[in-house]
Length: 280
Image (cartoon, rainbow, N blue to C red):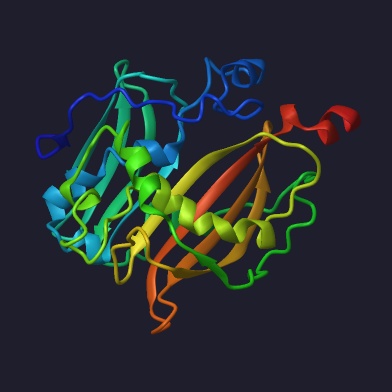
């Protein structure tokens, strides 16, 4: 472990605590067995970014990526830190831990597309689902329609008021031809495809289970229009959740070039679904 790079302790803010009825709300989360309202994994991912740029260089913004599987939930202001273990010039193992040493998330980072990333390996190993109720209408392999998406600059400003790691390129649009999106609004840009590919039956409570973001011709910036396309990859389940995996990409609307892509896994909690309560 002598080569491991260790980040500083940070106390991320649960910026969605006001969203009543969701997993980030204290009352809802506690009813479902969590300590309190959980912090979104995409917020935790923002803590890795300066470490990755320091390790891989500024090229990471154009063609770098990180791929993380979320193992344990955290609550508002809970101390966490990032760690990175180099695996050659273009790849690294990354993870986050709390003060007790519990792994909050773990995965891989790279400079250049990584065919053996944490989430690509996990998607390849997804087992067939058992009893699926909330996600019964998802069609694997179904593509979304093209969706236009633009993240306004005020969404970046909103993140910068609470972000644990502020970077110059989030504020200065001259570096990359626009203000770079921190991970949380970056991930949000892809999510416009979800209504097309992820129909859910009935009310539900969901939480992020894993996210991979990969720049192809990045970065992704505020006030720039992109075309988003997505595809449902797999449906699975666990004793407490139904699970959806999907992929999405952002494209330049003029050139048609792919700018960035994402793989995402969502967990829908059975304990919050009337379909599971009614059927036992």
